[in-house]
Image (cartoon, rainbow, N blue to C red):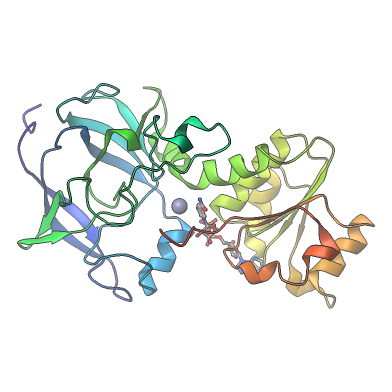
Length: 292
Ligand code: NAD
Ligand code: ZN
């Protein structure tokens, strides 16, 4: 490609400090170094975890380019890259997979030990982004709120050439988080409750359905989410604000003896406090690990 080995100028949404709005800026994106891939981002999702970073400094260094649910086309690759090539359609992964550490080799684990996400820099300790002469920091090994990004080869998954990028970008975080949590846990014929019907909660519902759950009760304070929840597999939808009784009692009454699996996908662990004994012994909290 004519841009191979050169700096690319493009636009990105930069967050200069917590509490600021996104600022669309022209940035420079350096070529990929060894074992790195430069990607033209064509689609990106907006995850609940990003929304928290708009207002709060959660272990990030600013200015930063957020975005961790992205998909695009490989523009160029650095030395030693063997798993993807220029022109491949790819999904950016915020969880690296080095394939060699104890976590990657353990089928029950997927938190790769390869250290990068804490630093907001690439593995050589530098950034590939600059804006107005200053370095701009990376986020979650991905930084997909940019027309071009550079990420580690082990953070890139090649996808089918026919894949619709605006859909498969969600596999980078929300879909795999929710669907994976359900499919790896829920048993056939069970009753499930899902608290929070954002992208992750909807994916939990799809996972519960695929795992053979008999009843999937979707819970949200925004009733506009109910139609989509039913479309993807919820059998009932409840707004806790429509009930006098606490939600755990409503669920208990609906089921007779509580649900078998309960998923907290609002992002508020307090949802679980005081309800666990009443509703379910199997609570799964889907919230960001602190280090991210
Ligand atoms: P989202 O903001 O799109 O959805 C949250 C939903 O919760 C909304 O529909 C909202 O109406 C609902 N809600 C808010 N308060 C409620 C209440 N009191 N009762 C019932 N419903 C309520 O968020 P999302 O992108 O789906 O992410 C959900 C959570 O999962 C976030 O905390 C995010 O940080 C976390 N997350 C974790 C991982 C991970 O651990 N790997 C990955 C992705 C997201
Ligand atoms: Zn996410």
